[in-house]
Length: 202
Ligand SMILES: C[S@@+](CC[C@H](N)C(=O)[O-])C[C@H]1O[C@@H](n2cnc3c(N)ncnc32)[C@H](O)[C@@H]1O
Image 1 (cartoon, rainbow, N blue to C red):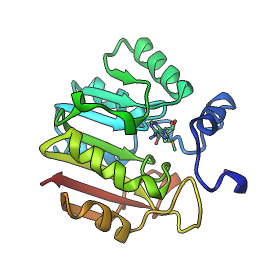
Image 2 (image 1 turned 90 degrees about the vertical axis):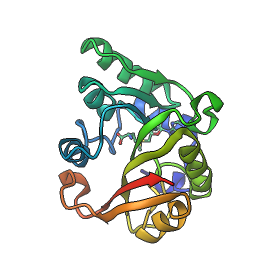
Image 3 (image 1 turned 180 degrees about the horizontal axis):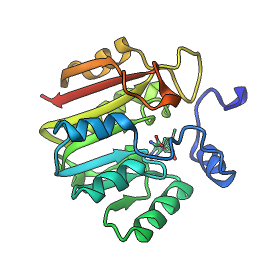
Image 4 (image 1 turned 120 degrees about the horizontal axis):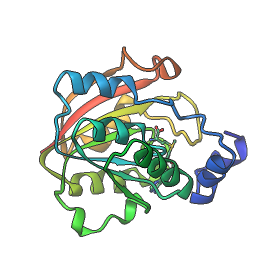
């Protein structure tokens, strides 16, 4: 991503990436740590939401395994790709084409779990507190956030650097952080750069 946009992205900036098929963040498959958490019965079937889901490899993976999945993305390029994949695979999932920060009260306490992947680092750092407020509002009591947080070690963004302290500072008050470690089974592209977090809403 070029220097002139390192102060944060607007929707049009994301759309440009989809128009130009420049999805440098996209792994082309579900992130391996989420597969591991599923196989280890840490992410269990129920209502699951994926904010800033992009083309939605996680949405597909968990819909295929019987979860009731909601993917949210405000960019039509992302939503179009995901809806097409779901149709081709004859799968059901709810795809919301909207701003995550505008989720209304109908979503309150609606979800058993939320998957975070390269969305927390995609929003501006001054939006992080609002992110935590919304996540805690839409999860059921005891609901789980399973997250891969991206430590770029660089200034500016997106992606904006996320450290262990950032995660503890933002989530520590409203979540019990059950697990927070440098992920040792990341995709090659993200090796040594991801924090794996499992937290439960207090
Ligand atoms: C870096 S991409 C990550 C996509 C996906 N999570 C992945 O890892 O492949 C960030 C995504 O978040 C979406 N996005 C950014 N801000 C958003 C917002 N406020 N509401 C909904 N989607 C947003 C963008 O359209 C983009 O698809």
